[in-house]
Length: 364
View 1 (spheres, rainbow, N blue to C red):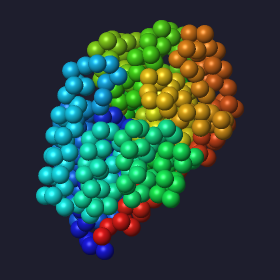
View 2: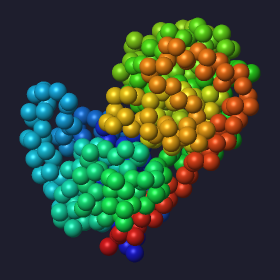
View 3: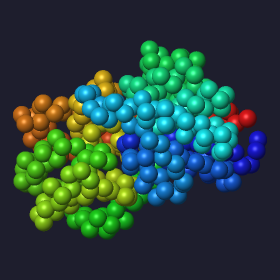
View 4: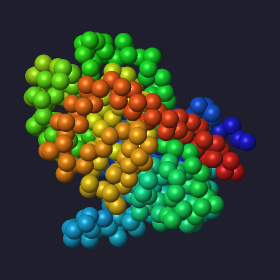
């Protein structure tokens, strides 16, 4: 086994693709301190900031997904695809990776496609209970597919699949020990319950609208609120931070501390969020986004709810049921403990290590 293997990791577009990619990179660095790791992303997407912040170099491809309606973007797609495939070829030839790893998103599609044509070993990591189109297309040629949910045989070749779970930030594994640090960091009142509201890295319009409408009701339940509204919506909602016991944030850097501070969580059910919430073991109300492929967020949430590990409210139920569901949960310590215990049992905390074990087996 060489001491300084080379890896290309590609994934992006959303935090759900980027954070698993960074977690895998960190574990590879941990095992091979002299490893050479290069990221490849999409030029104007958030990975171009987040990956360098995590300490890794990144190259950008000119690629974007297909919009659902007729747009100029769609007309440009063939051109962008050819450009991305050709740039991927250049990157792979000059960097000469031992293994290429994809965590989803259109940039990873281009790089992994070219890598498999060149005979370079590839691994894809699928976060969702319903795979994205990129990974479905790549699965025929890739060497291994690390999945986070059972029963994905109808999408992927069974003999290539390994159930690992999703990589999560390692600093989330011991959040229980960080409560007092978390309360100081966010300047919270230790005697009050803390409600954490998460809408994903970009924000969730419907959850923000819900909070705006229900803020006074929530404050009457004697909670303090950390509301991550997303960078797309920060200007619109930041003035609510003027209220006592409310903090509106566009983005949270210290997820370990915010989870340590939280008593109850309201969250979207993207794959990364679900995996993180299983590990931190907090009572959660999932509000899935209905605007995603094949309604996969509802499927992600149901996998937890069916084992009595969380509550689920559809967007269409928020106006009629939210207040009752929230009030029952915040006032019922027994239910909070039960949900907490059950969701924690569904965690797969060794996912990152297992995925890296599979990658290491492929190093030539």
